[in-house]
Length: 125
Image (cartoon, rainbow, N blue to C red; front, side, top):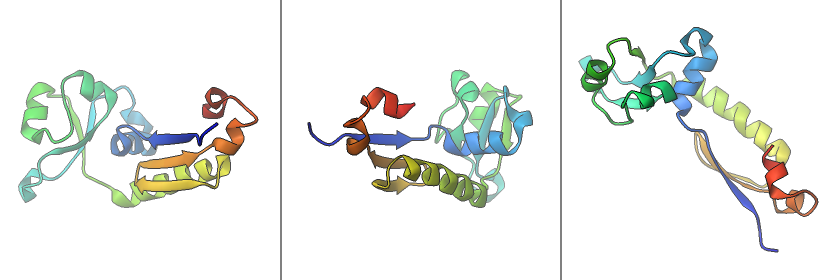
C-alpha cells in the first residue's frame, strides 16, 4: 500500500474563527472583509450562510452588502486566526506527527501508519 496523505482545508476559516470567537454570529450571514475606506473593500471570507446568498471571496464589499443588507462585516483579526490555526494544527499533530503546513488553514497529514491499523475512513473521525 502506498502512502495515505490527507489534505486538510478549513473552509471559510476566517469567518469560522469569527463565529467561534463570537457565538452570537451563528446563523447569521458573516463576512470578513477589508475596510472600504482604506480601499480594501473585498470579501476575504464568507461563512456558509453568506455563500448561500451568493456572496463569495474577492467580491467587492459594496456588492455583498447590496445582495444582503443584513450582512455582518468583520474586519480581519489575524492574531485570532493565527491562534486558532495553531490550536487546529496542534490537534492534527496528535493524530500524526507527519504534518506539513501549507497555509494558515491548510495542511497535509500523513496517516499511512495509522491507516495500516485502521481503515482511512475511521482515521478521519
